[in-house]
Every structure is written in structure tokens, then in C-alpha cells.
Image (cartoon, rainbow, N blue to C red; front, side):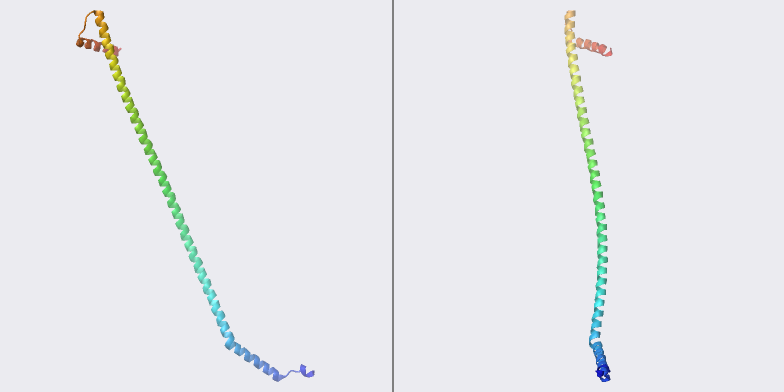
Length: 164
């Protein structure tokens, strides 16, 4: 058992040589491709991060443009609605003015017609009164007046009545 605790330098040297050979082979054939693959992967990740950042920035710019356009459309819509309301109010006022003018015209026509009817009725009444007065006067006087004289007398009587 004593041999087990003593180091065997030959085995130790072969183990160290095998280890160094393994490290050299791993470095030459395994570590290089693994490191290159890791570097490529790292570059791909960085590229993907940059692409995502660019896409996010583009999306934010597009969102801002769309928000601005939406605000502009809302403003235009509000202006168009206000203009339509204004046009409606103007048309309403015009229609009311036209209706008022037509009503005033109808009232004026009605007043003129009433005045004409009144004057006609007064003329008829005056004529009737004159003929009745002449008839009464001719019976009272006992003579028949001529139409021309009767008209003069009636006109004088009417003037006297109107002056009073």
C-alpha cells in the first residue's frame, strides 16, 4: 500500500501530456468554432435588438402621424359641422324673413281689399242716402228735381256733413 501513496511520475507525465494534448485539440477544433458560433449569435442578437428598436421607433412615428391626422380630421369635421349649422341658421332666418314678408303682403292686400270694400259700401250708402233724400225732398217740396240739380244738392249736403 505504500506504493499507492507514492506518486508515479511516468503516469503523472502522461496524464499532463494527455491533458495538454486535449486542451490543444479542444482549442484547435472545438473552442474556435464554439467561440465563433457564440460571437455570431451575439452579433445576431445585437442586430435583432437594433431591428426591434428601429421597428419600435417607426411604429411610434407612425402612431404620432396617425394621431396628428386624427386630430386634424376631428378639427375639420368640427369646422364643417359649425359651417353647416351656420348655413342652416342663415337659411332659417331667410325662410322666416320670406314668410314674414309674405304675411305682411297678404295683410296689406287684405287691408287694401277691406278698404276698397269699405269705400264701395260707403259710396253705395251715400248713393242710396242721396237718392232717398232726393226722393224725400221731392215729395216734401212737391216737385220733381232733375238729376243734375239733385247731384249738386247732394254733393253740397255731403260736404257740409263731412266738415262737421
